[in-house]
Length: 71
Image 1 (tube, rainbow, N blue to C red):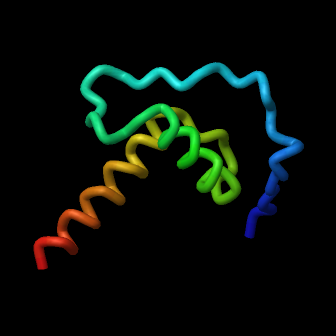
Image 2 (image 1 turned 60 degrees about the vertical axis):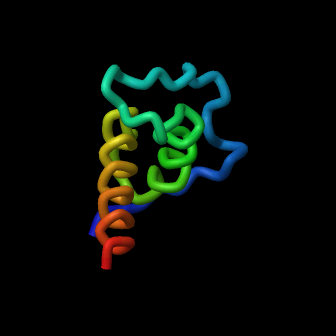
């Protein structure tokens, strides 16, 4: 199994560029939500998550919640 590196908040870069959402991103996905998604999920990935990766995670979670709400 691969080694997982978890950065503490103090170790994370503070000079990161602001998140720019691509055209067509659902209105409920905000730059702040993307940043939070990256912060929460990054420890579980070997490579840095992109904005697109985070949007995919959020859309999938949103779709799951929508499906569960219909039942």
